[in-house]
Image (cartoon, rainbow, N blue to C red; front, side, top):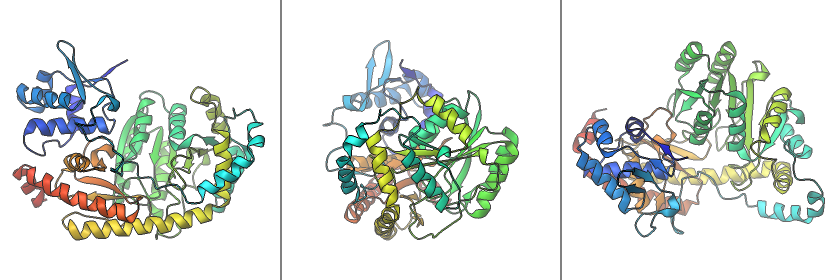
Length: 474
């Protein structure tokens, strides 16, 4: 069934779209970006021209011109009397739009290339194919040897864990969806960070959760006072948090922040879903206690995966939770999938036997990329605030004007694919921010910095002068 977005909801999603002249093209670019980010799903009905014009305070002719521009670039299709709907990406004309090309620099996924030793491990694993295929292949709990390896990883961190507390999933996103279905019913309050991993927010909303956001910033970390107020007032059923090398800010919680959030969750009876998919990507922070181990263990669920550390194509993740919840998740899972592929599980177990080597290589690779892109951007865009995260996969850059969407669209036309700040927002905003991953090769990141400089020159010149003056006064 096709979906529909109201004029008010579209206005909220567009955020600060008035970034250049002519106005109709700025509006069209704002809608294009929503389509590219999948914030507007294919076959979504857009508001009527008159309705959207009224909400945005524009003339109907301006909205009509924006829709015409979107039709010309293949982003929407309009039928007289039936309105306009968004089109799937594959329907668009690559000669008109700047969809992904072979030589584009794609920094949308924030995922490094495969760990160099992975191909050899896969080759070794295939030799044992007769043993692997002797199994049924429908194991929705996960191979015992892999669950044991994961449990040993937790034990090495000081969290005694048994295989009965581990469920192997098809990546972290599958784990988030499964937990959302198990823990959330329609109308339940769910505490999340903002900015946050957008696909997690989508999964929680799809389960019926009403998201309440707690800000996290590069400079100040988590707004603990706001979190306490939210917990006390709304008693959230669950909270989704990324304590280590948070996506997208790269920030890690201090011990005090972990303790405060844990105490608040225990008082409110909130189940903490801790996304630790980037927790092992330490560049130069050093060891830090993972925390959340002094409260009722039934309130703490941990998610891990090999996507960021080893390879995005190795779709193996896991959930660590109390055995009772694991059994409940197993009962629910068969409606979603029938188990993680056997071959991938065997490869994952072999990877975990060499995990120290994996982490060491990743640390070196990420440090090199981080330092190169920071140096290039700080030198050439001195008015941007470019942080130096101690780990993780990306920079959360603060620009000196709220032009994130416009910058992303212009960079895309030049062959650099990025994700704008508002994509990571839960309740709107972050138009001044841009996520720039440092997972590519250094020479690629230098090219990306060159494109960003060119794009910023174009976008800032085209921005309304009042916007730039106002931001200069902040």
